[in-house]
Length: 88
Image (cartoon, rainbow, N blue to C red; front, side, top):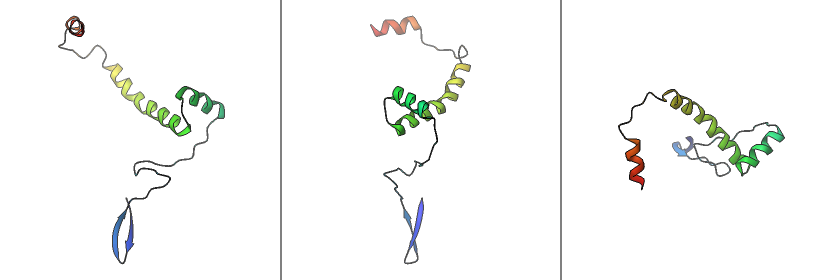
């Protein structure tokens, strides 16, 4: 958090640029126009939304890989047949 001095007293200052949250960071990215257009078409959104979705998918990739490593190693106490009957 940024701070400023007011009459010798340190005061916290929440800085807001362009309506950004304190946890956000403004960046400049150089990307291929065709790649961005293709990604925006799939994401059905603007540039910022498309970049966010792409970063979220990339960040989740490792978590998905770890889950795949656990496949077949986790024992569940739930009977699948019983679970399906419970839905009806």
